[in-house]
Amino acid sequence: MSVDIYKFDESILGSDSPDPLRFAFVKKHSAHAGGSSMPVPPPQQSAIFSRITSETTTSKKRCLYIHVPFCRVRCTFCNFFQNAASRTLVDEYFSALMKELKKKAALPWTQSGIFHAVYIGGGTPTDLSPEQVKTLGQAIHDYFPLTADCEITLEGRINRFSDELYLGALDGGFNRFSFGVQSFNTQVRRSAKRLDDREDVLKRVSELAKEDKIPVIIDLLYGLPYQTKDVLHQDLTDFMSTGAHGLDLYQLVVGGSAPMLNLVEKGKIPPPATTPEKAGMYELGVKFMADHHMKQLSVNHWAIDNRERSLYNSLAKTYAEVLPVGCGAGGNIGSYGMMQHRTLATYMNAVNEGQSTIAMMMKQSPLEPLFASLKSGFDRGIIQASKLPVFMGEDTFNFLMPLFKVWHDKGLVELQERSLVLTLAGSFWSVPLAQACIQVLTSEMSIAVPQASNH
Ligand SMILES: C[S@@+](CC[C@H](N)C(=O)[O-])C[C@H]1O[C@@H](n2cnc3c(N)ncnc32)[C@H](O)[C@@H]1O
Ligand code: SF4
Image 1 (cartoon, protein in one colour):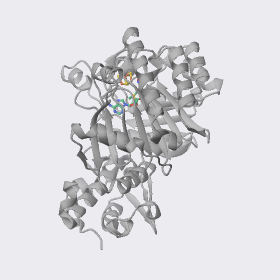
Image 2: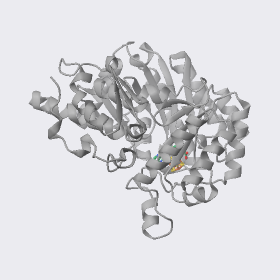
Image 3: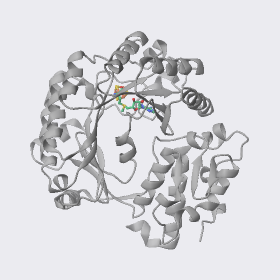
Image 4: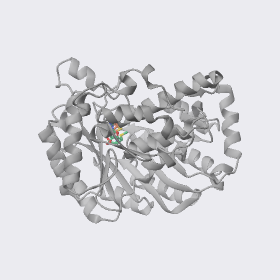
């Protein structure tokens, strides 16, 4: 059996265009593809969390995600901003965070397995004090079962990243830095409300990379106001000049709450790049990386050498379970997805009164393992038939083959015997392609098993 694709429209099949890189789809709406899930009513959430975390299981790979929801200044493009940082607030939050961390570390579920990757994300975790960074890192080592080669990332920014902070991170046992740079260009940075100028950022990234004790990975965006193709080319050249160990190159996707749209509307800054313009920038980036013999780890991630593994990114996008800690952290355990409270006061009250920190819980679709496998394949740029779980007793790769053939004819994928390789255009559109597979499978399953959509 295989899917009858002719009932699906261009949002699934892609449009017929001689230029699929720019025009196969209209635009990318979000950073990640997602499958459908059923909300768990709030009164049941706490009991379910207790049940799944009192179970002992060692079968899956695990990650720990810790969220630090503060930033000094809100960048105009950002969808992740939660709270303005102040020393008192950060200190109060840190005590609550450590309490929650110890409590979650003591769960039978936590102690029964082993964690392969830890990610301290934000917000801006580098706004913690050097002592807090050290304490946090040491607590992770002291309380959690970690693999010997566990990747422990501290995310943040170069702004006020002092020598003391660096030493705090080393003492805390962090072994990977992920710094958001976004662009080195001073005009682009100032218009986005980034705090330092090009020369300062270049100097500090280069110094940290040169130390060579902890790999330094940087994030660049493409499509920001004032960031022409020439500016992007210079950004990539600047990245190479720093000697940093890896690069994430993300397409700018501005969400509803980001201040940029309002500033553009008022004529204060030029609009960000259109989707076809961003497609051209992606092409430039991919070519630049290939010309410089960078190792491509995924559709938007490159490494200079084998030191950068990007373990958290690849594990958290696959079948790994993620234990969430902190205000606004998200994760998944068993077949449940969960989001912690996003409001600081609610989160801190919950921790201090020994209550549940979960704001939202979802029972994942029974197809989630398959969706995760597809998302991971599309993120890597290669979908292997052997890695996909079966779909309703069928070989998933064969089931989706009619869709893959349409994409092949549109220049989005290359078909090999038992694998699908994304072209440059397919790599640019990898999230809509993953989402299309998920939608097709969800709709076929609800036709075959109507009650599936109710569970
Ligand atoms: C949540 S931020 C935290 C990083 C850090 N606070 C900083 O300022 O660089 C992680 C990454 O998300 C990416 N990001 C933020 N806003 C984005 C947007 N609107 N579209 C695409 N990526 C975005 C940026 O590249 C950023 O480095
Ligand atoms: S990019 Fe980083 S510093 Fe800027 S608002 Fe977003 S999370 Fe905060």
